Image 1 (cartoon, helix red, strand yellow):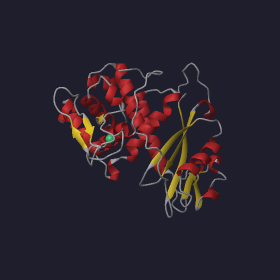
Image 2: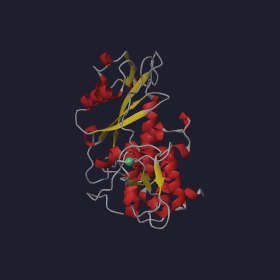
Image 3: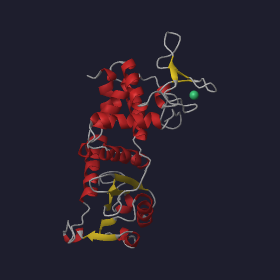
Image 4: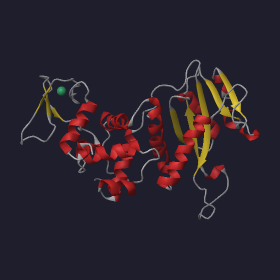
Length: 308
Ligand SMILES: [Zn+2]
């Protein structure tokens, strides 16, 4: 096993290399690679002091992040990140709790923090000139007819909309409001380049959205068609839903609607950092680590996320 998962010092060195590729960055004044490492027993591990005359403040790579105040050793965090980013279908908090030897509640908290770090912030647009964006929707939850509150119909389930640029990235959204068409319009205008060709199924959700795009081609699933006459399809979006649903059934079993977006973010992260795009397990874990530290995820005491 890699020592960064067993040794807290090695873990810190690894984290520093990932988040500071050009040397330590002072979080107070932003100065790069102008800090002195403070060694010795008097200082906590990984402490630096900024050399800027007007700053001179001290910092570590974990200042302001969930890692800083956590009682969980850094190497355990790194191991959890590697497990969650490497397993294609995800990993349950129960599994994580057994594998890394922390309490179940702690594992649950850690996983949600790691999921936060997986958000890519929706930077940039999908598609572009000569490219395709597929939009598709699926419905999740409330499927067991034996369950207490079972009701038939899409309106009783959670709507998920995925936008996928084939051969590139996906974005998946829990569409909260009842008006799916409005949601789809809003998501497409925010996340898809209008110079793209839009490919969807014949669902009324996408009617009237095509004029925003270079073209809008549909595939008639109701007629048993999976590829249109011009080669258009929504298979990439459906594949994404397939991975998501298998993971949710096999690993997470159930998820409350208020957490659905977090799980979607997790699956989206792995999809967008997949081996097919040249990203291996180690690189994927590094990207999640950058998300935790780079975004300064703070430690929260509110709600279900407790101090650990
Ligand atoms: Zn400074």
